[in-house]
Amino acid sequence: MTASPSADAAALEDFRTVQQWRQSFARFWRGGEPEPAAFEALARFVAVNEVTPDEIIDSVLRSKESGDLMLRTRARRKWMDLIQEFEDTEQSRDAANGVRSFMIHNGVAMNPPILR
Amino acid sequence: MEFKQVVGLRRSIRFWSPWQPIEPEKLQAVLEAIHQSPRVLEVDFLRVAVLHRDQMSEEDLQAMKTPTTTTQIELCPTYIFIYADLDALSEATDGKNLDEMLEAGALNRSHGWSSEFIRDTIVPQFYQEVLDDTDTVAMRFRTPDGMREGPAYSRQLLALGRTQIGIAQGVGLLAGVDQGLGVQLSGVGADVPKRIMGIPDSWITSSPMLIGYAAEGVEAGGQRPREPLEQDFHDGRYGAPFESDPDVVKRLTEDGMFQRPAPVPWRRDELRRLARMFGLPE
Image (tube, rainbow over all chains, first blue to last red):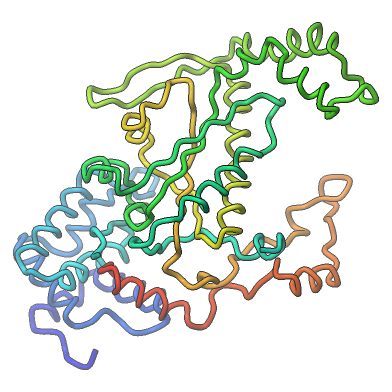
């Protein structure tokens, strides 16, 4: 947690969902924030998929007329599969879990298979 | 284990030791306890099917998962599915179950029970009325080809069946803790176990009981919060709180029914280390 995020990761700072990730992470874990490597993994993931962090979450959690959010199962499944592809490409569970942490702290539940 | 400790130690366990199966004798002890559960209307509604994770194909295991139960289903070695067979009430209209209870001295003349009362009143006016209720619900089952409609049952009968399942679940959870095991009721995709175990259409179920050795500490982070007893429990009439006597609470605490409240100071560290051990996100 001492290293600074890369320039690409720093560019994500202003996104609403990235701020939400930071806040939710700190609240749940009683302080601290995701590792710089997790921000960098998210930066690579959004670059590979040509999408912003907010667009990812908005594609899964759609606003209803009532103002409530509705989880779109197919979109969630799509991102789960893309994160798994990302894990396979990077050969890194930690990198993929960085992206999964971003999703979870934005209200999109997902888990990878356990490591045995 | 002493009963009050069993009550005090029960938690919904979400981290299991996936490498450690349950000893057959411990599993049997839990099943025997479930089998001794109180029966709704003295009818043998209860059915149980045990499924071991390692017996399942990867595809079936995947299909059984839901968004928030994926990890626990994958970690837990054994699932106990508790069912109510809704056809059991039709089978009980011969009154045999109740006659057995008369013979056993469980149903007594002092309370008005007789073979004649069972045959002429209980069966036709209570059992049959539940079966004949026209307010019915058709069972629907998900299949690889879409939804399939099954038999229809009265809502009263469904409520009785679900009550039976809930009673048995409660007994099963406590029996698991008594065996030193971790337990939890968990949502799963119910169509998968139905298909792979060949469960009849007349059996309804609810959340299966996951059972195995917990990877979490025995406290699992501490005793979970509850609303104050006085808020939800009433004495004599609605709105009159049942007062909790602090001396009784003190005694129950000494006996282990009340334990250190969650979260214990190290809970976040425990969760983080468990997540890392299994390669899970934080």
